[in-house]
Length: 468
Image 1 (spheres, one colour):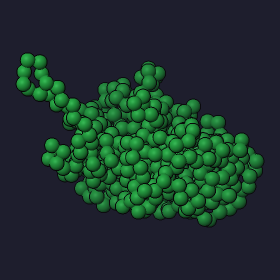
Image 2: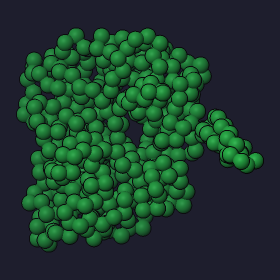
Image 3: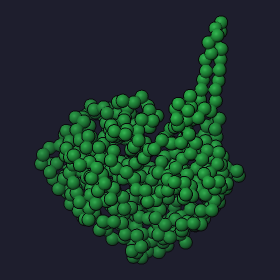
Image 4: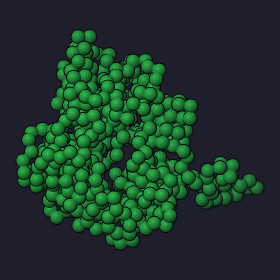
C-alpha cells in the first residue's frame, strides 16, 4: 500500500476480526516520507481599523460574497468578542492554494485546510492583523515574528483620506525593504469623486515613500507572471480594487499571488546550511508533549534527530541560555512528514534534554551556529531604522519587538547610519544603539527586523546591523 502511494510509509497496522465473520477490518496509519514539492508565500495583511481586512480574506479563502454586514469575516474570527464587535484582536492565519495547473484551491472546492495543502503546489498564507490601536502589540508581533514575504495594505474606498496608520504601514514596508501591494476594499460603496481624491492621495503617498517603485492599478491584466516578478523584485507596487459584496477584483489578486514566489536567498533547501527554526506558537499535547509551530529559515531537520547529524539547541531563555533538544515528530502544512526544509511552515514536537521553559520567540538551530553569521547572545545591539513618529531622544524607553517576543529597551545612542538602506526607500534612516532592560539577553543577528512602539503608537522600524 505504501509503495503504491509512492511518498508514504506504514506507521502502524491494527487488525480486528468481525464477530461471526471471517472478514477482517484493518486500520492502517500512514506518514508522508518527505514533503511534496511545494512553495509557500506569507502575506501580512495590514490596514486601519474598519478597512475590511478580514472581510477581504474571508472572500479570498472561502469564495463567498459578503452581505455588506461582515458575513464573510465570520469564517476567520477566533473569539466570541470578535464575533460580537466585528473587530479582529488576534493574529489569524488563512490559506489559499494553487495546484499544478494554477487552479485556486480554497474552501469552495475543499473540505478542510488539510485538503487544500494536499492538492496545492503553491500555498499562500495570509496573516490577518489587528487594525485598532489597542491591539498594536499583536500587529507588531505579526510583522517581526511571522516572517512575512509581502505586505498587503488594505484601504477602504470610501475613506476620506489615507490615514496615519496606513502611512505608517507603507513606511514600515519601505524601512524593512519588503515587497508591497495595496488592496482597495469596499468599491461597491465608493463614490466617483471621493475615490478619485483618495487614489490621488494614495499615489502621492507611495511616490513620497517609495519613489523608485512604479505604481500600477491592476484591472483585468493578462501578464500576471511579470507583475508578480516585478512586485517581488520591489520594482512595482500593484494596486487592486476589490468589492467583497460583488466579489470583484479578486481574480487578478489571486492570480498575482499564485505567481509570486518568496526569495530564496536567505534559505537553503538542500540541507547543506545549518537548521534554523523560529517559534511562533506553542501547544501542549498529552501524548506528544510540547509542539512548536513556526517557520524554517534555513537548513533541514529530520524526525528523531537533525539532518546531517547536527546537534540542535533551543533558546534563549531570559538569561540567554540554550539547551540541547531533540525533534521527535514533524508536520509540514498539517501533514505528518519525516523532515522539514527551509522556506516552509512546520510544527515540531520538541523534547529538551535539560529543563527550560519554551516560549514564543525562541529559536531552534544547530549548536555550532550560535556564534556564526554575526549571531550573538546579547542585550545590546545597533540598528538602522526609520522613525515613524516624534523625534527620538537618548535614554528614551521603548518596547522593542524581536521575532515573536518583545522587551522594554532603552535608546543608548542616536546617530546617522548608512549600513542598511532599503531598496527604493526615500526615507531618512537613523542609526540607534539599544539596550534591553532587566538583564534580558536575546539571540541577535544582522538583518533581523525590529519594530518598536510607545504606548499605542509605532516609534520606529528597521533592521539590526550588529550585536554588541
